[in-house]
Amino acid sequence: MEKTMIRLRMSSQDAHYGGNLVDGAHMLVLFGDVATELLIMHDGDEGLFVAYDNVEFLAPVYAGDYIEALGEITHVGNSSRKMTFEARKVVVARPDISASAADVLEEPVVVCRASGTCVVTKDCQRKK
Image (cartoon, rainbow, N blue to C red; front, side, top):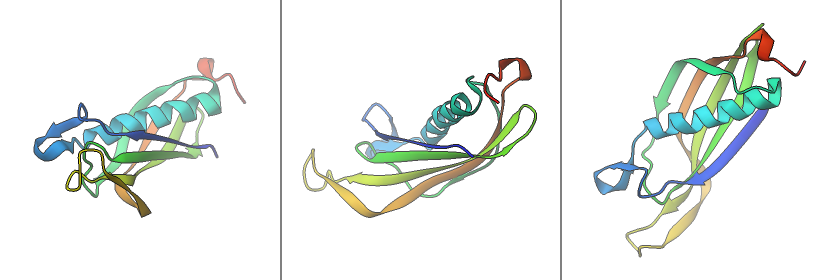
């Protein structure tokens, strides 16, 4: 099955709460981008996200942190594609040291997990 990963830095514009805390829903935006790439790889079409089956927010994310969002297609139906997702913090901002300090984590911290279903209608499936 297809797998993919994107990595990006959370900016101060992503911070939604005091203390530069990033809204957990931002991880779902990343998962949506991962799902789109997976569907393009698998079917040649962006498809549509139908529903999340499960979402777990496990650790906070702050502006300046680097997040890897990973996804995998776990089941392929006629038009449905079940997927799992995981977001991991791989670099942590260190504003306690200076405005530009950061540390690469020895072990990534899982900040969010989710599973969901996307659909690519038969007429849009270009890859078999």
